[in-house]
Length: 113
Image 1 (tube, rainbow, N blue to C red):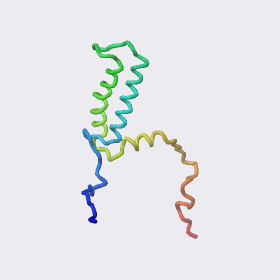
Image 2: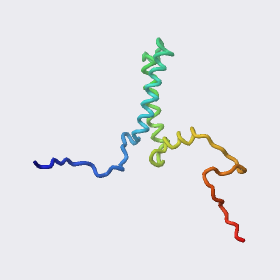
Image 3: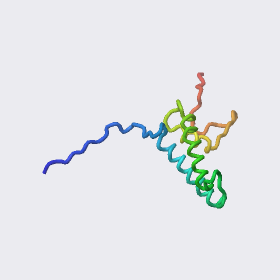
Image 4: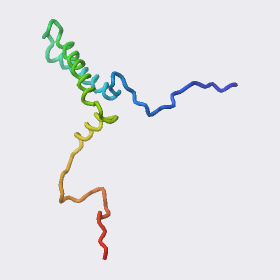
């Protein structure tokens, strides 16, 4: 019985990009759009703007402003910049020059006798 072979992509480190945005960025926009649609359904059920129901107008505004805005914001930034930015802002920061460093046990400077 012959071994069945199929061609595969050899470049596994290639970025998945659609409309100059990474997959994580598009998922962020999708989450914001779905949240605005839910908010539009519950907060503004009978409101209309330009004869468009509010629960359709809010996601449309987020798409029209969010995608180009994110493209401009991420221009020239490294891969996974948005994820790193969110993680940096969610972690606690302690800025103290008198506190001891918890990661390093060895002293930075050696005292020569």
